[in-house]
Image 1 (spheres, rainbow, N blue to C red):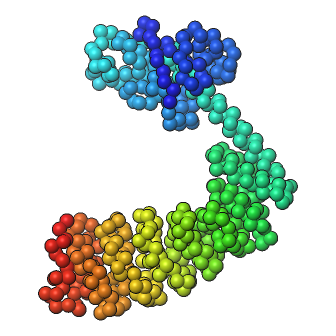
Image 2 (image 1 turned 135 degrees about the vertical axis):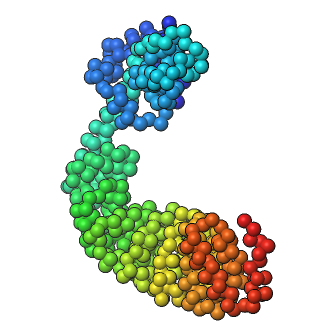
Length: 450
């Protein structure tokens, strides 16, 4: 952030800077001569002449860093009507008047009593603020216009270009769209979504398809666009690239498919694909590129909500693969994986797959009361499903893994009453295979103090 050293004349700030961004402080005469404060010459002279609205500029720019001298000490927001008190301190007019209306007759910054409660408009500081924001605003507008023009050119190129020229146009469009929100809007407004979608089909090369999807995934897609992209040939291309593309392409395909699933008209048949699910699990299990785990699990979670596909997910061995992944997952990924496993446990084949995986019970017991209440809820539900399926076999394994002590922790905690009730029922189920004395020793009560 530029540093400013305001001086004062008769209690009014008169510092100025040269507008170049390096924070150089100039005297007032030099500032006016060089056009920084709206004199002849320079972009800012034009900006002031156009009567740009300061409030609008501040809101649209929404800058993270603003010179401290422009900030009102009361609201900590940029001043639009700065006034100076007799103490030499400057405030936004509306804020200092509110201060006076509350019965305070002191300077908020110094807490000095005021010998004069009049306020003097700080016109020099106002011009400095106006100048600074005008420069930023006009630059933003110019860049926006340049971007819009370039996007239009690229869309025109895509209409007639083929081969490498088409790929290069898509690559540049991808970069522009990723960097500028105005570029996204221009693509949508000028029919770019339909144009780019038309490039996806059964004969589309992966080089073109990957770049096209990289653009589409960053755009706001309306219902018509999503319906168009749900055509079997387009979904098939995405599935192919999910299996064979780069990690970036795989992630983009995953995100785009999930975006399409938000559409009400989405049909479960579109995702009832063995190849789609296998590619998705490969992405989730890729230890070299962990950035694909979260989007992969997120899509798998959405797919799990379609009952027609749940059995297919179990059939590809997803249950045991997800169970083995649990210890290495970050909390956000872990919660998704547990949700998926809990959902699949509602199927008979899902329960059986969880029971047959040797690490299901130890991993679930370990997660109780560890990450979040949601994770505890999912893990507890999975343990209940497995132990109910094979009470004698699974309950013994669970107790040996420390389940009884963990269940007592849940019961003693301040978590959801439903969880406490489920824990009590599971604890009772597990106790059936033991005498009271042995089961109490398994609970390790001395270690359950909160």
